[in-house]
Image (cartoon, rainbow, N blue to C red):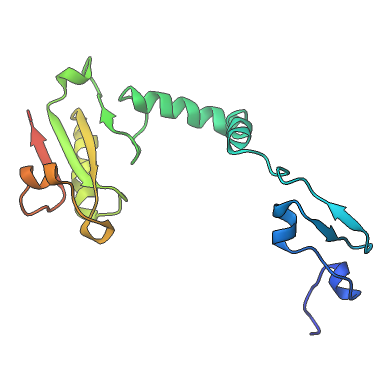
Length: 155
C-alpha cells in the first residue's frame, strides 16, 4: 500500500529472508537473489553482551553499585537485600522487612521509606504477592494471614 515503507527487496518483488532463515543458519535468498548462508551462531552470547555492557562507564558504575549493595552499603535500591547504615556487620541487624517481590506495593514502600529515612539497619526478604503466586509456607507460619508488609524484630 502507498505510504508503507518496505525494504528494497520487498519493493522490487524479490524474496526477503525470514527470521527463521536468519536465526536457523539456513540458506536464504538475499536482495540480489543469490543464496546467502548465515552461521547459526551469528548473534553474540549473553556472556559477551554482559562483558560488553560492563566495560562501558555506565556498566562500571552499575557494577560498583551492585558490589556496595551486596555489602549493605550504597544508595537505596529495590534489589538491595541488606542495608547496614552504621552497623558494623550483618549480625548487628535486628530488623527484617518482608516486602513484595515486584516492589510496587504502596504499603511496603511506606515501610521501606521509613526504614531508609530513619537509617535503621535491616534485611530484606521478598515475598510473592498473591497475584504472583503462592506465598512460601515458612512465611505463612510467621504471618498466618500472609499480608505484606511484615517486619520481624530479633527474629
